[in-house]
Image 1 (tube, rainbow, N blue to C red):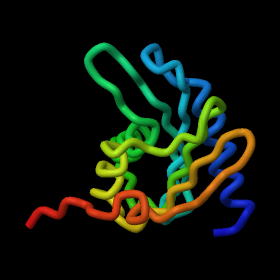
Image 2 (cartoon, rainbow, N blue to C red; image 1 turned 90 degrees about the vertical axis):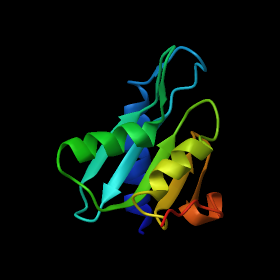
Image 3 (cartoon, rainbow, N blue to C red; image 1 turned 30 degrees about the vertical axis):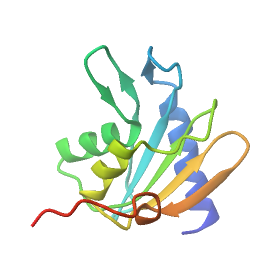
Length: 126
């Protein structure tokens, strides 16, 4: 993945974070998912009293409702902290691509990982 593409995903995730609804944690997180077709879909975290949806989860759900799939990378961005996805979100992502590239970024730096590095013992159902 080129530096330019990584930066594009991070920039789109940063913009998506502006739409976060995060009354519980007060940490806005944006995500940008890259599809095999080079399309990008964004999402943000949504926290309510009854449900929390991670930023990548909202982006993937949005893509699926539009008939899109083939997820190859996801970038997370947060201004307040390094936005590593939760275990729940990693497990959700692994249903679609256990080798997806995961980029986490804030205003200072970024790092890139394979999902299986962050979730090494994925549940597999027969």
